[in-house]
Amino acid sequence: MQFIDRTTVKVIAGNGGHGKSAFRREKFVQKGGPSGGDGGRGADIIFKVDNNMNTLLDFRYHRKFQGDNGENGDIKNQYGRNAEPCYVKVPQGTLVKDADTGEVLADLTEIGQEAVIAKGGRGGRGNAKFANSANRAPTFAELGEPGETRNLQLELKLLADVGLVGYPSVGKSSLVASVSAARPEIAEYHFTTITPVLGVVNVGDYGDEKTFVMADIPGLIDGASEGVGLGHDFLRHVERTKVIIHIVDASGMEGRDPVDDYYKINKELKIYSEKIARRPQILACNKMDLPGAEENYGRLKELAAAEGIAIFPISAATKQGVQELINHVAKVLDEYVEEPEEEEGVKVYDANAEEDKDAITITRDISGDFVVSGKSLEKLVAMTNFGNDEAVRRFQYIWRIKGIDKLLREKGIKEHDTVHIGEMEFEFRD
Image (tube, rainbow, N blue to C red; front, side):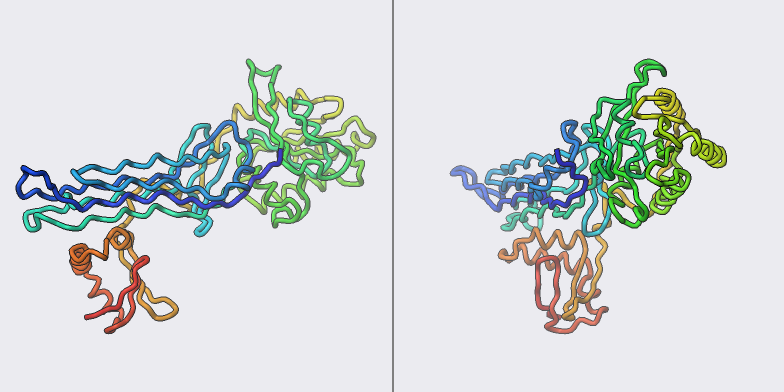
């Protein structure tokens, strides 16, 4: 199966149904009042973590998700039906970002977790809702509110307890294969592993049926923190791991110096993320069954003592020392305390959060036209039926109440200048 861990999609929530303008017309009811019902709410777009998905491959072929619109209101105060939410299944570990702003909308890490990514539009109110003592027979109704539209970037970050780091061909795949049921492709050439492999490790000699997830992630090369080679595609998957097993080829059989390799890999980790560099590390000296390994192991022990990290001589091929390594990893995981998350100025999207809907800003575009922006005002424009004189008068009344004429004059607007609000364009007249 192909492993896809980054993609872009577009989501369009459903529009609200239109309100109805109607009056009671029963034979024996004199002076029947307004009876137009409200429209139904449009469908929300909801992302849900599905246990049966482990890649974003499905999104390569299905890049657009659109919710149903709410039904229109009807006569006799009948409300339109709300649209059912549109659920989009994603794998565990999916990070959802707004592709246009970079805002983090959701971090989906638990099976069954849900997040509203785009809100459906509110249904328009029927004319019955606008009846009052001053206007007992309103003839207008609201249009449905448009649903939210978002361009999204989806990133899949592996949810593993332990991540293996090291240069290509140091034996990461062999270690995963020796301690779990995972069967990554293993061969004597670089970059055999081009996609992450997860293995569930059962610690038989430590506790009762203790298990943890180990990730065999593609090998690092110099410059990975700057995107060279697999670069960020590799490093992204290390972000969620709790413990790092740093594997070096103790035999140096390919002419590499394992001590030098250790420092180079940690340099790449630190450049990419200080937080990753602070993760607990365990040094695994692999290929101890080969000539030259014992000599290098002495130097690696000195390195481990200087760095203050645990070191284990192993051979993934013969399983020498592997059980001792796994037992120690299980112990470190038991004692692991998650580092507090840093804000870093990122606001996670809350679809139900109240925004400053009354904030109005006035700018000018490249052609010199005036652009009026504001959540509540743009919503009012979208839901006003400008083909109805009474609806237009209501819009003009709210326009005056909000003092937008005054704000435009302060910005230097003149007679016949063009004003834009959402999708509407009109000529200013004093």
